[in-house]
Image 1: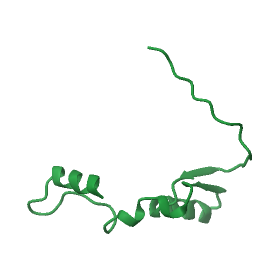
Image 2: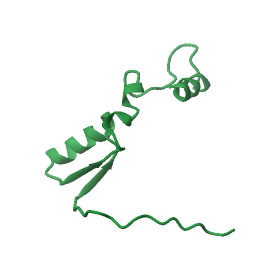
Image 3: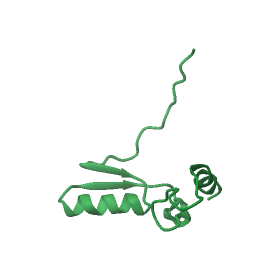
Image 4: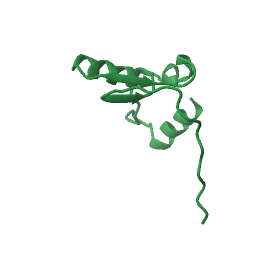
Length: 82
């Protein structure tokens, strides 16, 4: 197997942080806010636009197959469709 080496451009900026949160959805911003409230220097990294994330597709928070007649397969299908 031949290894593939990916080449990235040289960074255009540098930043120091105690915590880097990847994602600016509800979960990422909640984590960032809690870290900041604890006095930790936080940097949030997101996609090109804030509304590119998946939070808007969330249907009430953490989802699980808990209802009568609900199955893990139905939950998977719902997740993939969203």
